[in-house]
Length: 328
Ligand SMILES: Nc1ncnc2c1ncn2[C@@H]1O[C@H](COP(=O)(O)OP(=O)(O)O)[C@@H](O)[C@H]1O
Ligand code: SF4
Ligand SMILES: [Mg+2]
Image 1: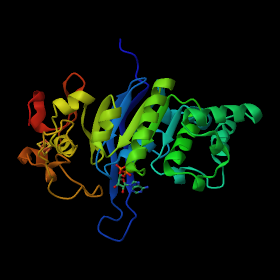
Image 2: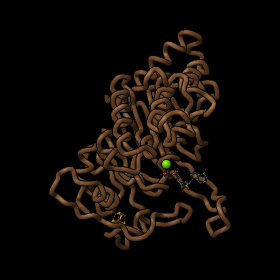
Image 3: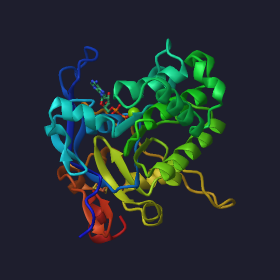
Image 4: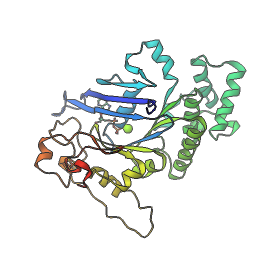
């Protein structure tokens, strides 16, 4: 029997009440995450991709119960996270850490790097005094920071250094699961690669299981073992990284892949430009969530919602034309 995955998400749903503006969407339900199921094996990195606003951050936050779920369940190492008592959830939080996009807003401006990382140890009752100092310095070094950083405040650090401090603070708790939500999106291009390399090294060293969230499929390709493509609150395709690129089944995934610069120089790609705007999640719709922008949409697509199903081992797709694994 295959081992139980570290993370199992079942029909996770998060709806918001749209309170923004005075327009027609006000008071409507925003289906930010609408019945998402997937799993992540121990030591695996799962890449979650999709356009801005499709629900990636909401999914990551709700999985960790940083947002109150509307429905569904999440199992961590077989334990139902949403059913845990407050104290048990607090203890489990140490195991599940999140790294966000903006490192400056993730850090207290009045705390030095050393204080920020050491505080995490103290809050969880793991170390104090000299031991805390020793472990903090060690973790800052592991995250590639020079010793002098210990007494520096966030405003004295570059964005890349700040993100290393945030990563050190998450990892000092010895978590088994990390959600990295667009951790490099606010960094300069040259720094982005350094942070991705650091995350890869740390994942090997500490045997981490990761959910890596990004709008950039080209980047996720380098770091993820399996990839889930999200559109309008739901997964539309999921496959091992190589398979997703080699045998793309969903028209939306095709469009995303066509925008990734080719790895083979001299082999230009034809970019698929999607018609229409990215969807407004407050709008309700029938049929396939992608049909207003899909170049292949037919009548059935407007009426019947395609379910996510496995068309070959480990390859799931939600498209009527992909039935039985045929290319749409
Ligand atoms: N706190 C909130 N209240 C109302 N709507 C929200 C809230 N957070 C997110 N949303 C909406 O949910 C949708 C998904 O947002 P988000 O998860 O941030 O997407 P992504 O991370 O993929 O860019 C968006 O339409 C967003 O406006
Ligand atoms: S179900 Fe229809 S509209 Fe949806 S992705 Fe497939 S072909 Fe396009
Ligand atoms: Mg986001």
